[in-house]
Amino acid sequence: MAYTYFPGCCMHGFARHCQDSLYAVFGALGLELRELKDWNCCGATTYISVDEHQAIALAARNLALAEREGLEIVAPCTACYMILKKTKDYLARYPDLRAKIDSALATVGMRYEGKIEILHPLEIILRDVGVKGLKAKVKKPLRGWNVAPYYGCLIARPYPLSGGFTLEAFDAFIPALGANLVEFDLKDRCCGGSLTGTIEEVGHRLVYILLHQAKLARAHALVTVCPLCQLNLEAHQGKIKSRYGDDVTIPIPYFTQLIGMALGLSEKSLGLEKLLVPLNWSVGEKAFAAREPAAA
Amino acid sequence: MARPTFFQKVKYEKELKRDLAAEVVATPGGEKIFSCLQCGTCGSACPVSVYMDYTPRKLIGMVREGFKQEVVTSFSIWLCASCYECTVRCPAGIRVTDVMYALKRIAIREGIYPRRFPVPVLAKEFIHMLKGTGRNNEFWLVLKVLLKTAPMKLLTSWPLGLRLWRRGRMCLSSTRIPRAANADLRRMLEAVEAASEKAPATLPIAAGMTHTPEVKKAA
Image (cartoon, rainbow over all chains, first blue to last red):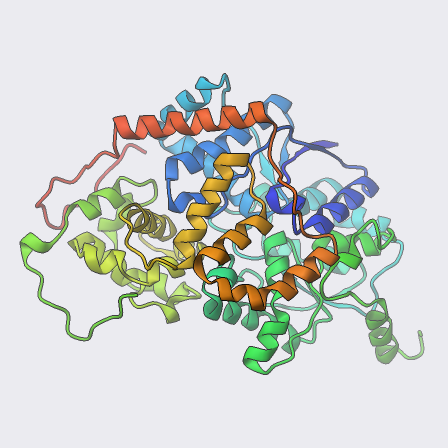
């Protein structure tokens, strides 16, 4: 199976390790990613605060480019994912807007028809490989690891997940890797997005709430599906510790890094050394030994 | 930043800006503000409403009545991190997040924000960079925003930058798309801009009308 890969700006910047692990895992699962040629920034949640129609035009250009390829779009950043879905929805629902965007696309000889599906890589793995298929490929089960899933806001809001998935169904990938699923109620609570950079007092508080809850739930790792959440949760742990006097150090792997570990891929190909808070293999082994002394 | 005052000044009819509601209604997602039942679900779902001066419910109420000054100077509109929690929960089907975006746009367009306030500065720099290169480069974006808003913060932010850089997670070179594609992109954005100037957002509500019944748009 092949897909059109829409990286989004962060996968080429601070989230290189997410991209490395995404390519590695998709390769190992026999799924092919073809990067969209000449893609542009989707506009994120920022462009729309200045001009809504231009923001939609930006995303529409990407959709039109992807339509030429004819394959489903994979967007690993949930902001890109949501923006592309929102653009598709708005262009279908608002004919005036559609006419305006169509004529703008026509000035550069492009056309948008609204036929292409936008998917998150986790949706693709669960739909096209499936939990059973994933389980069958696990070589080094993550035994002993307590993993809490964190999906962030935009993957399930405002649009439901593609393919009829729910966030609860998403959780299934964690036990499939041999890890223990930690119930994490805040799995779709906001991480603050750009607030951690703009209005720090508020942004840090939002991140702190998530990290604190993950610690309370005794998670060894909080796994994310969005590169921006990944950076937010990971980069501010030191500042949060000094601000709130609470040690919230916890590794924040991107979900393909975790899957890759279980598939037995090399640490380098998964970019594990690029994490700010290192994932320590021995944590899981120690927890496993403590729980089941006989088996260890 | 405007602080909430305990005793609001009485507004007279001529002081109210009815075109505010019209502009919000003309935004995709904001059509239904006149069906808002003021239940407050938006504010209770919102993860940042505790920091807001006016909750989203109150903002929508004020937009409908034309309290433009209060709305565009409120801190709330900049706090919205667009997590869409309010939008999925609103029983009246108002896309509150899009309403917040519309209010941000009005404030940015009219230049109503403190000079060194990072949210609008970030938005403007982001767009500047996007028009120039077609993509955004976080390193240069963050650097520019910090220099324009709080240069002293560079003193506390550089360790994080260094940690990212040492792990190869910082891209200092430009990440532009090919020139031809970028030229296309800019032509497209200009076409949208020209179309917006020619036909500004329609104003379905006549000025001076109060409590207009729900504005129906072709579905």
